[in-house]
Image 1: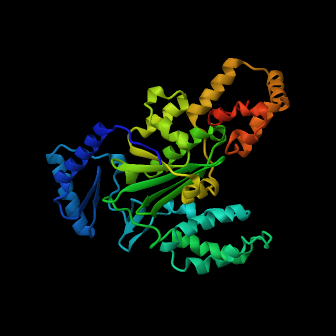
Image 2: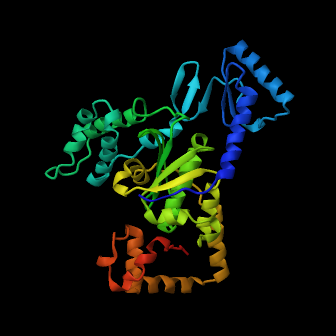
Image 3: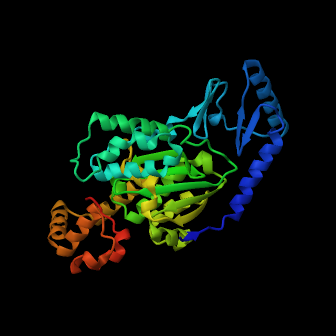
Length: 376
């Protein structure tokens, strides 16, 4: 295991001061829940209005201003910390379980094995997991030819809903430690927030065309940026352990922004500075949830990173490469033995070591995580 814990004492003090100040200002008012810089007011119609009046009066006395754009006034339900609260009780926020519910069906035994790996990891929380998943496990037998039938979908669907609800899905507890699994595949991002080994929230998405051209280490950092952005309301102001299966990332993330060579990595690290993150390396075979979600991701129409798009467009414009020269570059790349192998590995994934790589491509192996493909 390898770790780094960045020095963020100043931000910790600021966050703690915000919490203490808000609690001191409003927590004594019955019916008011204070969570960092958020205030939740609950009550029946008249009771609610009376409590709201007390909060507004207190705010005026202390010269406190509320963000008008974030106020939700007298709403029947509130989305908060992964759940929807209403007069009927609480239920999981679909935004945080959609990655599981809408996860695409497996197309082969390898993809099914990943799903069963997650189910096995969570089996202690899933009632009758072994019985329900029996048809799926039967499909993995060597003697069985792959065929996805309604009986398999019937077995998988309830397992998805069990994972996306109690007792598997845990209610966020601000007093417990927070762990995030974050991972990137060739085409997608996946992450999960856990407490005491139980999932609290899930997320996944496909990569944009520009992001697909990122070096692998940049995709891994992007998965962390995606995770903290998605789980911001849970983790802001709190210490969070982030699990990654990309070991070089631990070293790179321990460096200050100025010591990171890649401008793109610098920009992403800056986005992470406001969070209290500690990074831990965990082999990919144990990243059951994030690894699965990064490969069985939800496909949504996304726009490319504006900064990256502008950079690529500026670069190609500055170089002023003609169409005929672009064609020559492509042909020369494909005809070059070493570069054609590199392109193949970039698209399909690099071997775990450099022993089975041709001599022409071997020199690129140690730089494999920093190779970026530009589409002219």
